[in-house]
Every structure is written in C-alpha cells, then in structure tokens.
View 1: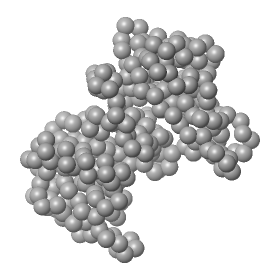
View 2: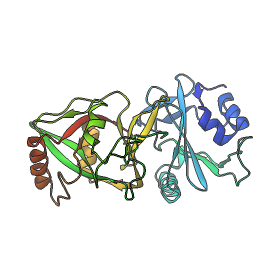
View 3: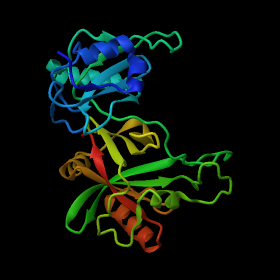
Length: 298
C-alpha cells in the first residue's frame, strides 16, 4: 500500500529513483515508526512522513520522522559514529531494524563509486545542513573556531540546559577582510538578544534555529537555510557527550538556552558556578547575547 512519504531531491539523489519510487509505493517502508525528532510514534499510512538519510563514508541509514517535525533531508555523519548508532539500536531493539539491509543505488548523475549500504532504523537522528553563516572572513590565516561549553544555568528558580558559544578569535561577515569582530551583530540580526540579566530566560530567535541531539549526544546547532529547511551553524566533528543532568534539563523543557560571547569574554571554566560568574560579567559588559532554542531530537 502506498505510504504518505516525502522524499526530498537530496534523498532521491542519494538512493536513486528506483529505490525512492519503491519507498513511495510502500516497499521497504514501515507502517509505523518512532519519529527521529520527537521520538513519538508515527504512522506512514495516515500521516505525512519524512525520509531522513544519514550518510557516512561507507554506510547509510534511512530513518523516518513526522513531516511536521522535520523535512526530508540528507544528514552527513561520521562513519564510526553511524556504525555505532546502528549497532546500539540493533542491540537495544532489533524489532525496529528490518533485515536485510537495502542496497542504495547510485543516482544517474553521480560519479561511479561503491554504493553504501542502507539500514532502515526508526530511532535515529535528524536534519540536514547546507549553507551556514561563515564564521570566519576569507583570507584570515587562522580562522576562528567556535568553542562550545555545556552547562546548567539557573534562570529564576528554573534550571536550564545551556550552551555557551565562544569563538577563538574575531568573527567577521562573509567577504569582509576588515578584521572587525561582528560575531554578536551577526547573531542579533538573527533574533538573538543582548542579555542584561542572566536570571531571565531569553526569547527565541528567528524560526529555524534549534539544537540537534541524537541518542543523547550533541550534534549541531541549526539555523534556517536560505533555501528552506535547516542548515548547520555549528556542527560537532564528533558527537559530544553531555551529562545526564544536562540532557534531562533539555528534555524536560524541550529547549536549550544558547549564550554567545566574543573571543576571550568567558574562557574555559572548570565548574558551573564559575561559568555563571563569567556569564554575569559578560552581561554586565554588554557582550552576552542569547536565545532559547527548541530541542530537535533526544
């Protein structure tokens, strides 16, 4: 029976027209699944369902999500991380991993290469990544790198999962060679606000910003893409482990506060109390921007 599947052009290009058409016709697609974004049950026979393809160097995993949660897309991930995720899912709930694996056919326009193997996995992860804000002006010999610190921040009486983003050097606009640091200006143009009091939870920035978690690990901070959908503003080279307390705080409110400061404003802090002191100082100096981002995944 045909499924209410959405297969994006990017996914179709990866798996080939024949495989895409087979999925739409009902082959290899499950009737029910756990959404890779919200982890709630989904029904591909009754509700619009996105196909999400996670692609490593040699392996690919096809997952499913509510179309209302995330669009159909291709997500590049580390090969070792992808294999580990498939192994852990298989050990934890083999019923959600149909066998055998489905071979992906190369798209007609793709150069000749060994086609990866695709496993269908319900509980996976999500979201793609086209063109992020360039965090470093061209021509700079040592581009700034975004450092990310995870911590629990108290706003009023409520504990919030927080990310503190601090570049290693000045961040300019794409195409600019002035050397002027415009990191906070770039963020405030996207709806982040300068913080005067860390005790007050910030508002949300423009729609499309979110924090991507998958299987309890931090993968990326996403921003809206000019072409629609989501793009990675920051992406971990390898998924970051977070503490159970941080993960619980993020899941409890389904959101994460993102704080951002220019280079040198906070620095590395070994404890959360010292991190809070540094954030308060940055706010007092007028160099702390923040926004509350919805949590994508778990």
